[in-house]
Image 1 (cartoon, rainbow over the protein chains, first blue to last red):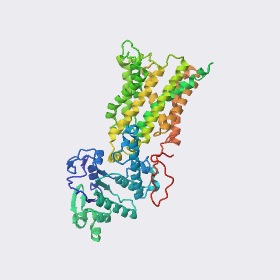
Image 2: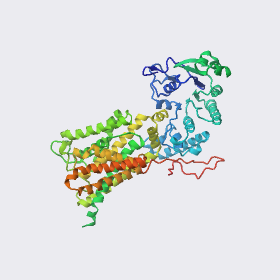
Image 3: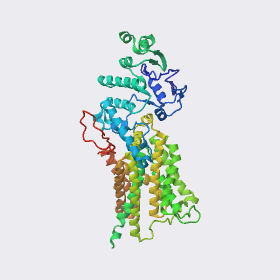
Length: 248
Length: 332
C-alpha cells in the first residue's frame, strides 16, 4: 500500500483462521490500521489481494464487505454526531426495509416490525455498554470514552462474522474492559465470530489472542502464540523494548 | 373596493411562499438530510419551468412546443425532467466534496441559463415562451389567484407530507448518518454514492415542480426570470435561517424571507427613480444582514434539526424505566 511515495504496508501477508481471535500488534506507524482499512475496503491496495472465505474481495466497496459479514470499528471514533446515541446504533442494523423509499408507503407493517426489532437490539447493546443514560444525547456530545464504546456497540448490532477492532481498549476504564473481553470471548465461543484485534494493551492481547501477529515498518515480523511473539528478539527490539519484554 | 381585491397582495405573496416552500424542501432533502451543497437550485427550477411551459403552451412559430397538454401533465413532466437531468449531473458531480460540489453546480445552473438564452428552437431564447395556460385562468383575476393559491398550497402540503414521512423513517436516519460521517456510514453497509444520488434526484425533482408552479402563475417565462443569483441565494437563506434538517423550519424560513423580500419592494417602489436601481441591492443587503444575525445568534436556524428519541418497548426486569411510549415516537 502506497501513500504517494511512502510505502505504508509492504509484502504483508497473513491469513486469519475462522473462529480465531487474532491479535495485531506493533509500534506506531507499523501499518496496522492501514491493514485494517484494506481489509474493510476503505483503502484499495496498490498491489496484492485480499480474500475472504475463499472469495477475492480486493475490489469490493466497503458497504458490500459489510453485507458479507465483515465489520470494523475506527481507532478515532467516527460517530454520527447529530444523531442520538440510540440512533447511532439503530442505523447500523443491516438490511432495514425502511431504508428504501417506497417501503415507507407500501409495506409499513414490515418496516414497523423491523424497527421494533432494531430498537430492541439497540437498547440491549446500550445496556451492555452501560450507556442507557446517554441514549438520547447527541452522539457528538458524549465523552471520548463513551464514543469508543459506541464504536464497539455498532459491531454488536450486526450479524458479523469477522469483526475488526481497532484499539478498543484505549480510553476505556478497567472494569468495562474486563466486560468487553468477556463479550468478545462470548461472541467468539458461542456465535463463532472471528476477531482481529489491534491493541497496545498487552494484558488484553495475552488473555484473548491466539495467534498474535507483530508488524513493524509495514511488514509482518512474526506470527505465533503470545509467548513466542513476546520473547522474539526482533519484537523486543522493534516494539516492546528489552526491559518490558524481560519483565513480562 | 370588493373584499377580494383587498386580498390580492397577500394572496400573491402566499402563492410565492408556496413555490419557494417547494424549493426549500427540495434543498432541505439535499443539504439538510444528505449534506449535498447544491448551489445550482435555479438551474433545476429553470428546467421545471421550461419543461412545463413547453408541454402545456399552444403552438408558436420557431420553437419546440404546441403540445397543449393539461396542467398536471406539465407538473409531472417538470418533475421528471428535472429528476432525469439530475441523474447524470449527480453521477458526475456527487463524487466531489461539498465545496467542490457547490462550484460545479453553480456552473451547471449557469449552463442551463445559457441554453435557455441561446437555443431559440427550444426556448425561443430571450423572447421566451408566453401564453402559458393556468388552471381556472378564465376566472376573474382575483378569483383565479385565489384558486391558484389553493392549488399550490395543496401541492406544497402533499410534498411536505411525503418528504416528512421519509425524513422520520429509517431512510432519513440513514441519510443523516451519511451526512454526518461518510466513511463510517459506508463501513456500516450504506451504499453512499447511490443514496446521495437518490437525495439529489428527489430534491431536484421538487425544485423542478416549483419551477412549473411558477411558470403557470407568471404565464410567461424568459431567461431573465431564472436569475441564478436571486433564486439560489434566497432558497439557501430560507433553509439556513429556518433550520436545515427540519422541514417545518425551512417552511418557516420561506415565509420569513419571502415576506421581507417582497414587502421591502413596496417600500423601495416609493423611492424616487434614481434610487430604484440601487434599492434592489439594498434589499439583498437586508436579507444578508438577517442571515448574519441568525448565524451569529442561532447557527442551527430558528427551528433546528430535531433530536430523535427512541423509547423502549418493554421494560427490562429490575429497572425502573420511565413511561414507555410506542416505538419510533418523536419527542421534542
